[in-house]
Length: 118
Image (cartoon, rainbow, N blue to C red):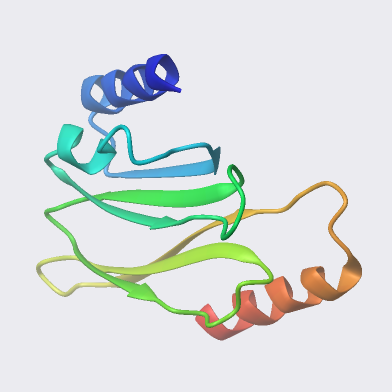
């Protein structure tokens, strides 16, 4: 994963993105991505008990952010409310991982979460 991770870090720094969403991440503790991205706040939700399929959001530190806890581990979603420093607007950003074989029950949970955060 190191090469892909370094490639992603370089692209983010070069393009100067405000928000970066990542799915199907296979991160482990061998590389501290948030330390390499010093102008970003890292939010991540790892898959419990297994590797892979985690999600992450990196938001530029110039924004005030609050991670919303959906309280549901069945659906791999991460929701962050972003407030501009001038308090002009709130923006809700989410990143979700949906496996191709996900059942209808989990889809319904996702739709419910989407309705609650919007």
